[in-house]
Length: 321
Image (tube, rainbow, N blue to C red; front, side, top):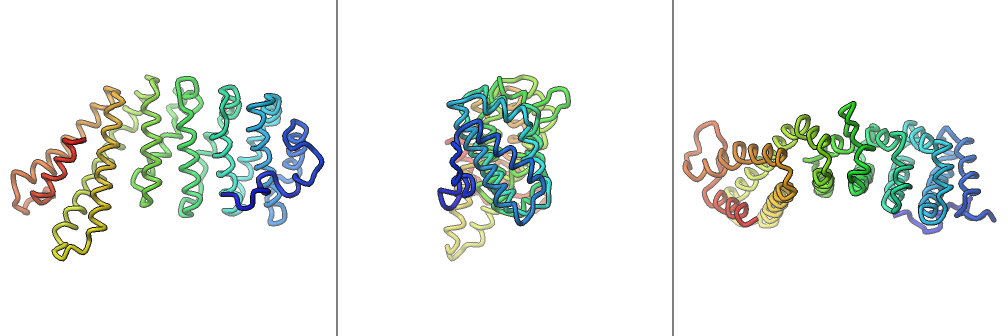
């Protein structure tokens, strides 16, 4: 992921006689950050290597020396990361920073270390940063970062992400914006994030999701599945020569993925979320698209319909799952 392995500790830092896994080296790296607060062509590689090295020290400190976290917090070093992100420094630094943050949160194992990193709301500021999501690499690392954070969600950490007083939950609300992203890996990551959120038994957070986001999210999700089903039906109807088997197979696999995702939500058994989801499923997908197509094959009328074989096949998938 990072190219040559030596770059993880940085060319410049690696040549130093200083122990790279130490509080002293972290202090030295802090000094480097303070001297390079503005990103330029000349110092961008130095800054990337510095951030990587800081991350490595934090991961080491998580296992060996908590004083590195004390220093990191005392000097507000996350502010430097945010400051770098907010500059027009180009995609290079953005990609590297997202990479490193992802590695950092993936490898932190002690809850105290995690609390240090999540305090002061800096992570939420990174989540809501206006990244250039037209860049596929930035999009991939960003959604991976959110997924990594969602794996850290539990009753003890949820308050770092969900603010009950301001009704703000950036990790969730930013993730679901990409539920219908054209890249399947992004869509899969969003599903994982939402499931990790729904599994946290925090009533205030779950009520927020129900009241503020469940209706639009589940409505959009069901609409997305419905439009997908119509595309699948069109593929069957227009493929007399059986040339689109690859596309049809992909569409069927995607439909199965949707069903397993819906089932995973229902299995969590959050009653008020299930109520909203089943209402949308029944009244906006099952009855109007699947069942109505069974009883009336007349293609006229306002409602979209699918062919009888496709309707029966998809209903059998629902029943099986």
